Amino acid sequence: MAKPDYYEVLGVEKNANERDIKKAYKRLAMKYHPDRTKGDKALEVKFKEVKEAYEVLVDPQKRQAYDQYGHAAFEQAQGGPGGFGGGGADFADIFGDVFGDIFGGGRGRQRSRAQRGSDLRYNLELSLEEAVRGKTAELKIPTLASCNDCDGSGAQKGSKAETCDYCHGQGQIQMRQGFFAVQQTCPKCSGRGTVIKDPCRTCHGEGRVEKTKTLSVKIPAGVDTGDRIRLAGEGEAGEHGAPAGDLYVQVHVREHPIFRRDGNNLYCDVPISFTQAALGGEVEVPTLDGRVKLKIPQETQTGRMFRLRGKGVKSVRSGVTGDLVCKAVLETPVNLSNRQKELLQEFEDSMGKGAEAAKYRPKERGFFDGVKKFFDDLTGN
Image 1 (spheres, rainbow, N blue to C red):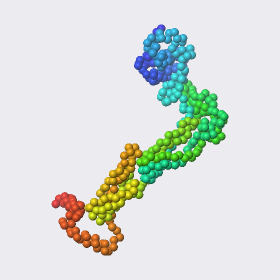
Image 2 (image 1 turned 135 degrees about the vertical axis):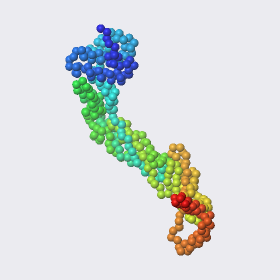
Image 3 (image 1 turned 180 degrees about the vertical axis):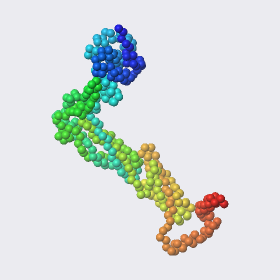
Image 4 (image 1 turned 60 degrees about the vertical axis):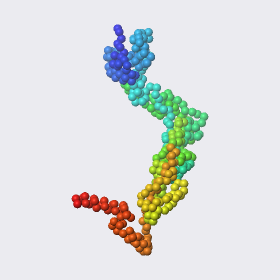
């Protein structure tokens, strides 16, 4: 009697990939498995056909031979392609492969024996001057460090971890229920595959101890709030000798009493007197390199910006230096004497009123003309 086509048995196309074949087999195996068919001989035969087709098509070499020669490729093989006499794949193992593809476990995949250490974060606060110039900071980091007495293995010196006799070093055990097989983490070794029978007395078998370590960290010039410096391998030690995590130094720059920073530029307000604004002059302004003279032209209005090239911050990435932008802020005099008030009033009277005063205060004249027009438009006059 001619054997049915394996692709037709599984109900897949000839170009089906491995995942499609496994999905088809899973569906049909659940349908025809003897645990469900309750002794129906015809369905048992159907199950064997499905299993045989799967074992050929899921194996790349067997599938290639079948595609080229058909069933004749396996006629000399005792017990058929899958070796139904005992050489075939176990049903539960096949399901392990199928579920493993879906959930990330499966045959041949073991849980990581030792977990990498956790990453740590350290918040470092700097002054603006420190951030701009850079510095070497000394950090004290509370962490889990590798145990010196056992070199991180967790085993007492002179002994070592042994293969777990419950899972035989696999880190997982298989639980069967009916025709399902479910893999679980080994409860004895917690998935590591090894157990420590003589634990280190210092770390109690953990391979790590609590410790505060001191690190000297070079902070590059030009860092700003939000910048992060990664120190590889300076985080928590890994379990039982596994690699350590990383340490991330998060930078925060405190507010400065004079300067405001925006990228590589610095900004500051420069107070000037009424006389300096009207007649012009020079004022001293601070920079990160010391004081410089800033020339104030005649008739300077409050809010005018002056840019000092190259007096800002040097970028930590591009190396380009920003500017210092100074904003002139007219300061109204306070605590005037009677005589000073009289002089100011005389000055005010000397400029006249109305159109005569407009040449001295053009912004004021333009403002009130705009106000008059606004109300005229509002009332329709």
